[in-house]
Image 1 (tube, helix red, strand yellow):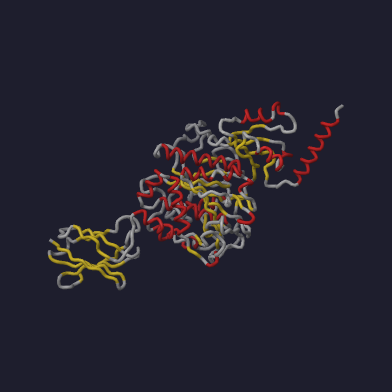
Image 2 (spheres, one colour):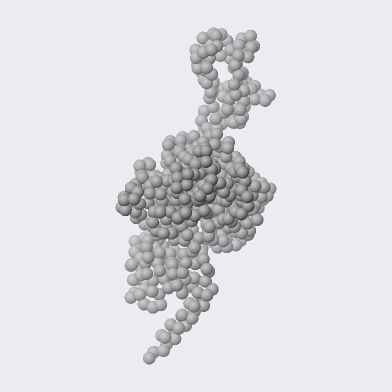
Length: 540
């Protein structure tokens, strides 16, 4: 008997056993994610690397994680899981673009146990009521239906606050057992449950409450108002990195199809929400996962990523996915009702972009009308919801850009959000902007590209003049606050007064019905505080 091979085998098992004992408990034993070079099939790779599948690496292909990037899930011996030397050797294979372990996702919440607030303080804090005067979400200025992809633990799709805002795949016939749109999913009418590999969603508070912050139906006499009163939620149940990768490819496919067919196919997805991740890890630990955000952005999709629910500097110690080097990621930390960082939030001057309300945020429970939601899992949906709401502004130029240059428009929205924050002393050194989300501030940053201007209070044009019935008044104003419009006759008597609210988007123009006025000469005056401007018109 040749004892040398047996001795080597026993040594190998001893090493693997030791490695397994030290393994991270979040690792999914037996799972390996590999991105292969273009044109290399998993079957061909296995034969090339392990001809005859000789000991000690019995590895089998499980499934492709989507069709787009040649990413696959393989089964390996559980004892090899976490062996970094073996993984590094695999990464040196010329046929391998990247390889990583599969991890269980950590959903970033702290379940509330305090009495909830009677009002949604978080929405007032980010100036949403003023934005709702402009838009409540749902459609772009050109009528494109805005979609948010939400990856999480589960959702109650029958809840009255969500059911009308759930996205439906128009390429699929629900319940017929056929993959109608040939995308690899049967009956994916409302997204997909990757945990159970089917179309029926799990019911779980974490995903449900976060999604309600983004898009609980507003003004319906029930529950709460979401940041978007009307928006479509594309839902995915996920608990592993491999499942998130599959969901991201689904999103890319849907938005890419929409871009390429001018809306005839696919979905106008503008954002994904990542209220999950791994603390104290850098993107090099999960390169395939981290590499998904750039292709999402290239299709026009931003991602709001929650920081860890522990107080430390992610720039020094790492956090996933917030530290991944993608310009299409927005790292989000959690602030309290006092506008201070939560005691349970990570931070980082370089990799965390801004803060948003988290602890004590209003949401809906899976079986009720109101509940509180805490942690960075509540903070990230505020930013995700803000992204979607900004796409619904009544600005045709923005809507056209979103279709013609989706990548550039996504970056424009991101910049508006980051430059529109409320800078707070409590956030100095804690994030890149040292600020907290202000949706109205982001709106104001987008106004210039939508034809909205400011300047001294002035009447630019009266047309027609002389006038018989409707007088068009084009004006300029120093801001978008109300001012008074007054009409005087030739004797100086005030015959008309009304407030004017300057529109934030489009031409600053109002109309005056002059039909009740007798023929003659009149003076129109605009008045805001001590500032006034007058012009004459003739009624015929």
